[in-house]
Length: 175
Image 1: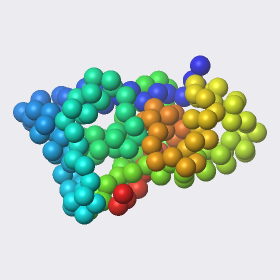
Image 2: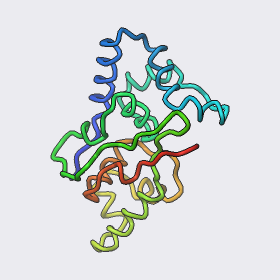
Image 3: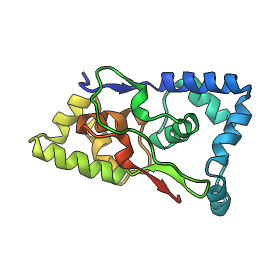
Image 4: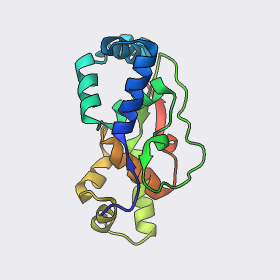
């Protein structure tokens, strides 16, 4: 049984949908706005646009990768901690960094892994015992060392376990 709060992806997408409706936008227009948040970077990388169909599937599922969640949070001007369900720890300033269209927000998962690994060792925990506390498998934790993607719920459980804001591990990036 997890001892940390969980990220409520359903609440995030509900707010996304409410904001979309408030602005009178259809999903393709929201996808275009999400794409344009990093429009110059996307053009420089010849990167794919946000797919309206994928956006709608994310809304239906309510779960998402940590990198995808950042696009939604940036568009809403909200922090990940605002979508935690359960007893969350106060972690100080949770505001995400501001970025222009030549960059995008990205989780630094190897840095998160290092912080978790240091804290795990300091607390005398094995990967298995930490995974049990967090309600996941040990490999989901150790894979962060080289990962570019992870699910948002896991990253937020880890930042809460560390007692640090997600923003400590979110940086403007050019990838």
